[in-house]
Image (cartoon, rainbow, N blue to C red; front, side):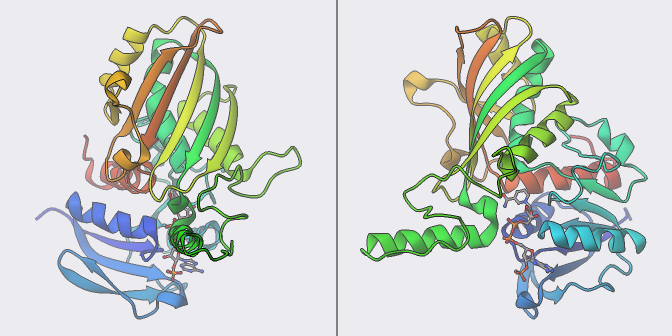
Length: 340
Ligand SMILES: NC(=O)c1ccc[n+]([C@@H]2O[C@H](COP(=O)([O-])OP(=O)(O)OC[C@H]3O[C@@H](n4cnc5c(N)ncnc54)[C@H](OP(=O)(O)O)[C@@H]3O)[C@@H](O)[C@H]2O)c1
């Protein structure tokens, strides 16, 4: 009989954790035991897995005994504290939070983009998954970089409220209800009203006015593409969309990027769905991308204002394509040697 694994999911009750359980089930990952962990708020809750109900337990230092693989889908402070504990207990940790991405010793892996990092990840106990916006951008931009090396990007990242977890989804729903009923609404999760609004802020600003999400996007993208000097100007905007991240991207390559070449390269890239018949109304939107495995790319056009210039628009499911699916693929590559 082939081997089955003892798996822990930290943050199982959150939006990423629930999506991860769905994907483990869909892809038939060989699970001997699944330990669902969350905060004391979820103590005693049950979640469905493979037709059964599993009890959610409170995370503590003893939770990783006998665990082979631990997915961390909880806040960064939880990963920072508990990944070393899980690793010390013998588990391989795959972390979704930003806690470990800036540590050069920790592999940052996105199977479609830098599969060679898997070799470095073998033998490591902590492996990081990139942020959802950088993941979608890297999948779409790598084939263009292979056509003509990228010189500079100008990115506007348009981010759904689910990027801020279940609390972000709840806040948009409640604010919409209040405002449609003519009542004022409170902002608790986001810094200002998000319903029927757009916020050019996703985290704290640094001394130069750069938002934390923008800094993380630039960092992860450079690391994934292995282009530490790539010029990237990023603006992250939170919009009243429940699921799906989008981005408007202006690409400047070192040489000319022809539209037919760019379209052919994108169409041939696993993990990309080219949807580019704008005259027919066919282009990516977050609503269409939600629930899909691919990064949808369209609205390709030459930017005639500079040599090597190209504009595009993309959309991807931030929970699925941007987070849970890459993490399960990393686990498949490490534990099953499974290739796509
Ligand atoms: N949402 C996205 O699009 C996305 C994409 C990529 C990466 N990520 C990252 O994935 C992680 C999870 O995000 P999410 O969107 O799923 O958030 P979420 O919906 O708010 O879920 C957070 C999860 O963490 C658990 N948790 C919170 N504090 C904890 C503690 N002290 N001890 C143990 N568990 C604790 C929560 O448990 P309770 O239910 O008990 O509170 C819940 O299960 C974050 O690091 C986020 O940055 C998110």
